[in-house]
Amino acid sequence: MPLLALAGCSAGDGQAAAQPAASSHPSAGAQGRAVSVVDGTGAKVSLSRPATRVVALDPSSIEVLHDLGVPHIAYDSSEPLFVKSLFGRTTGGGLTQIGGTWSKPDVEGIIAFRPDLVVGDAYPHAEIKPALKGVAPMYLVTRSGGYRQAMKDFRNLGILAGRQAVADKDVASFTADLARARGASPDDQTSLIIWGQSASSFQVPTVDDPSASVLAQVSKYPWGGSGAQGMSLSLEDILKVNPDVIFVESLARLANPHAPSLSSQMAADPLWRQLKAVKDHRVYDVDPDVWHDDRGGLGLKEILDQAMPLLYPHTKR
Image (tube, rainbow, N blue to C red; front, side):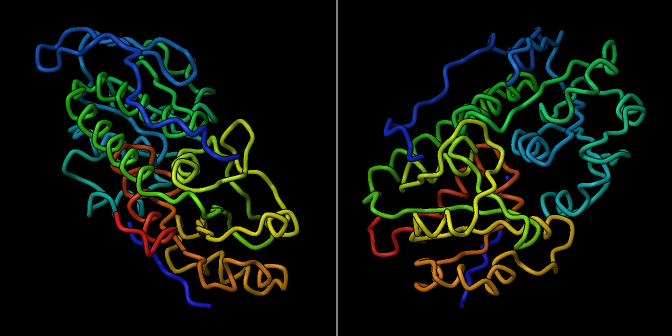
């Protein structure tokens, strides 16, 4: 079964994409005025001046801060491959590697970096927030809320970093691209994303996930539910829907680019081979660094740009 490797983490509501409303006080950026926003958990995050030294505790926030042009970024030791692919190097040039992992950040390393701001995922990084009291404010993002919440987080981080204009430009660009894609979409294809380490541990992201929510705007994505964590569905459940196109995120490749793809492992299952997308050779391996982890405007635009020609190869865009 031929697969397309793309380089680079219920159906939509039918409404056109709209630029998220500001939930923050405008930043003066270079003037250094105080800035304040509300994070994904509803907590207020305030800085006396825009941040220039930021600790990023998950790949998505590394990507967003890179897109925004934040000059000094620290990241945990579990992300060197991702950072190398993103920046072309693992250290130097405003990048600092600290200890710890995604699930257990090195608090002492964070403190030693002397950050103006710490950015993490609501799960599991809320647990270390008390330990950082008096060190630096913490902005927590959530995967829930689809691309709209992702755009809100992106814009808020732009405000906190004194780069609101950059964030607004990327948000506006993605919003326009999504509106154009919706207008060009026949909306007659059913799509599916699966992610996982192996054929015995794959999951399906709900429509509340950022990448899945993008697909739901331009195709039928009937994998509903609230919350963005993956659902454990059987191949029997998937076969009942029988999607036209399947996008596969091989999460093992986040740590080892040479790990076997999830799709190659799934190919041994007779039920997998019964799926329409498999029979029609419309199963596509996609870059998990982008599809699983990137919630910035540039990352979601890349997902959209990759998905549209695969969903509708004969549709003029």
